[in-house]
Amino acid sequence: DTEVTQTPKHLVMGMTNKKSLKCEQHMGHRAMYWYKQKAKKPPELMFVYSYEKLSINESVPSRFSPECPNSSLLNLHLHALQPEDSALYLCASSQDRAGPRQYFGPGTRLTVT
Amino acid sequence: RKEVEQDPGPFNVPEGATVAFNCTYSNSASQSFFWYRQDCRKEPKLLMSVYSSGNEDGRFTAQLNRASQYISLLIRDSKLSDSATYLCVVRNNNDMRFGAGTRLTVKP
Image (cartoon, rainbow over all chains, first blue to last red; front, side, top):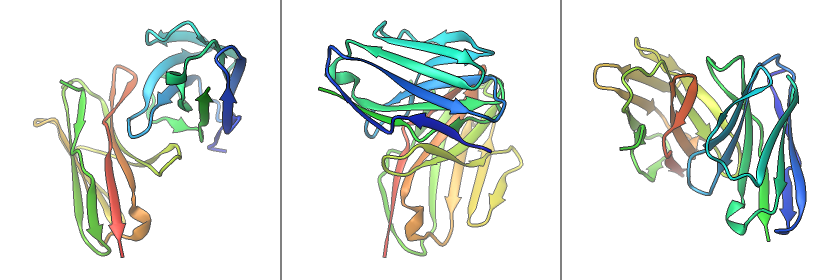
């Protein structure tokens, strides 16, 4: 199973809502990532978890809150988002932070109204 | 200067054409190199890793020149299904750095 799954596929939320994005992998990978991708731009790294510990937080606003409940699951909690946060949110995993490659989930397309 | 720079594109080519994409990277200590393909509104998927000796996978050939810090992707006999954005990706210090991507459209 070389699949990373993400739910939901699409999410529309108001600026006062609280929602969560979920990501799951069963490849035994110990590094998991959240990326944000705007249209016609490359993915931008937001967070990295390595062995369930947050190892990188790329100066992301606190309205985004990651959580890694176990080695297979990664959540991204959203609160008080802005319209400019509308984007494709991609989860990825790799064997560990040394890689060699990352496997991406299909993404959650988020629209903030 | 961006860590990974690619041809801006877009490339519009007829079916059967040969097309080449170039990429340069700034960190000479980069360890691994990849081409990912991303279809519209989909996630990036690994197309191929790039090795110093050059590597080929069917119609796709990737080359790496560490001295010049340059990576290339050649697509021969292009198909309509090759239409996508091609992302050059470089691994530095355990993290992946993405180029902005080059959009390819193959037309009948």
